Length: 244
Image 1: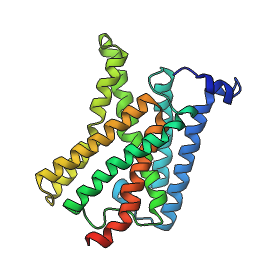
Image 2: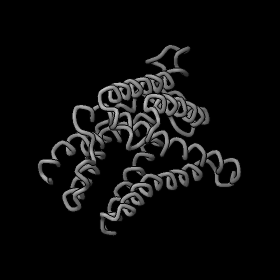
Image 3: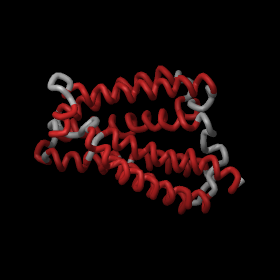
Image 4: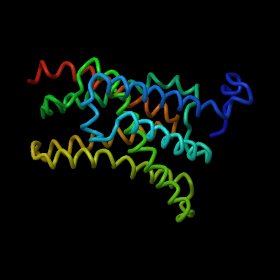
């Protein structure tokens, strides 16, 4: 996306092109540090998601992959990495994430998800930003970039805007399909519960990708952080006393 007037006031000319990338590198470094701290204190937390893979190495590789993917999207003007003026949207993003996380809480009250679903405090404060970053790269950036390059290369008649819209719709289905399949395979939940979770996670992913297109990657990630803060951290520490 082209530089904005506010960017010109904030950064000198030589720094402007590098600013979004440096912001992302800082975020990825923070995520790697959080992963190291969690792994040092509680090495089993990441095993559920990463298996036997080393979490720190995996997060570094994911961070590098995300940098390549975001650079490609940013260079073509399809999506932005970070724009300072979009920080004004954090209030709206937090409200939207809280609304959807509250719907997840209501589902939990009706379904009662497993007691060991959440990582406990204080590790949760570092674990969920790290795992959320991984999810953004693997479930959003990677498939979105691949789809966009395929559509623009092999179906140029669609045009850029339509290709982006199709890609957003398809990519938003990945995480809900994964979670619904995992729930259905466990045999612990009725079909209506699987369907409700699928619809909710679809809404989360769809709104995230819209925020990515409307604002930037940091806005999309901020939504997941706010959602996790309500759902996994705040509610996660309360639900054990209420439901079990």
